[in-house]
Structure formats: C-alpha cells, structure tokens
Image (cartoon, rainbow, N blue to C red; front, side, top):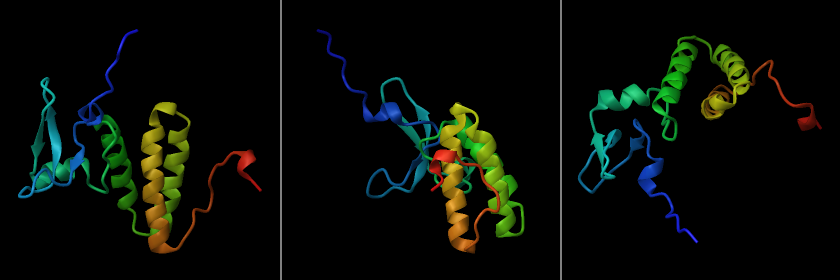
Length: 135
C-alpha cells in the first residue's frame, strides 16, 4: 500500500491571491511568488493588490482567469447604468458558460451580477437556463 500525503495548504495558493493579514503587524497583500521550499512572498503594495483585485476579491482564480475577470468587469463597469451592466454581465456569463474551463470565471461574474442586482434592485431582462430548472 502506498501512502500519498494530502496536499499542503500552500498547494492551493495561486499567484495573485489576496492575503488579508499575515501576522499581527502586517498589511494585506497578494501572493507575489511561490518558492520551491513551500514558502510564499507577499507583496503589500496597493498597486499590486489592485492589479489582481480591481473589482472584487478573486482569490481562487488563476492569474489568467483573474485577468479575464478583470477585463470583463472593466468593460461592464465603464457603462453608466446598472441595468445595462446587469444585462451585459448576463451576456458575458452566458458566453463563458459554454466553455468548461471558464466555469470559475463565470461563477465569479455571477457573484458580481448578484451584487449589482442587490444595489440596483433590477433583474436581467434576458438570460439562458436549462429547461429542467423551470417550474
């Protein structure tokens, strides 16, 4: 029988993940580097944090997924009306759902859409769903 050790907590940490606090006297930051010995380097520069987390905390996404998320949110937030933002987000979510590798990004976008819906008290006009989900 072969014993395979469980992955360490650092195995799930991605570059650009948000770190709220490391110790008692530290500022929040992002993971800037993962070293071979299992340690990580945290950058507390506000510009570095904003590079990965411009619109919300995207911890759990890969750096490429964070870039896709932030690019979409930049486009959406450039619109003036919340109702337009909700509709555009729904279009982007529907197009991303077709590709399985973009599931995490579409889930994060859905959370942003839910936040916009709560702020504006408006719902998307058109959205795609599975027929089994209809009541």
